Amino acid sequence: MKNQLSDQQITSYRDDGFLAIPDFLDLAELAEWRSCTGEVVAVRLGHSIDFLTTQMNPDDFYARMFTQCLRLADTHERGGS
Image 1 (cartoon, rainbow, N blue to C red):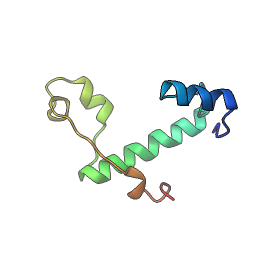
Image 2 (cartoon, helix red, strand yellow; image 1 turned 180 degrees about the vertical axis):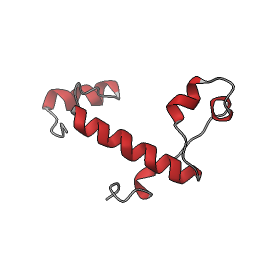
Image 3 (cartoon, one colour; image 1 turned 120 degrees about the vertical axis):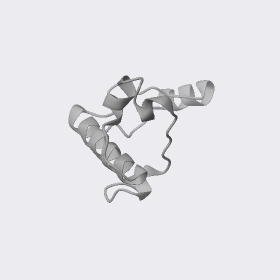
Image 4 (spheres, rainbow, N blue to C red; image 1 turned 45 degrees about the vertical axis):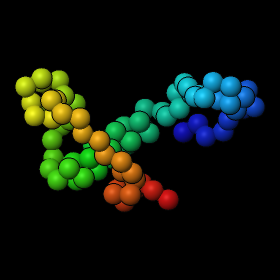
């Protein structure tokens, strides 16, 4: 994970209010984040479903509603501080 910011990146964030960091996570890290997020969302909502698949089917229940889960790191043993 790229976790060091240059002075130019800090200035850009302060000026623009956001910062895009190309390749912030490598492929293995991204896969781990996806896995953890999928697990904890399933736990938080009380069941296991593939959200990406169901969101692509417009007739599916979860594709027709907005579902938001906050503070997911509080739920997963590999997340949080």
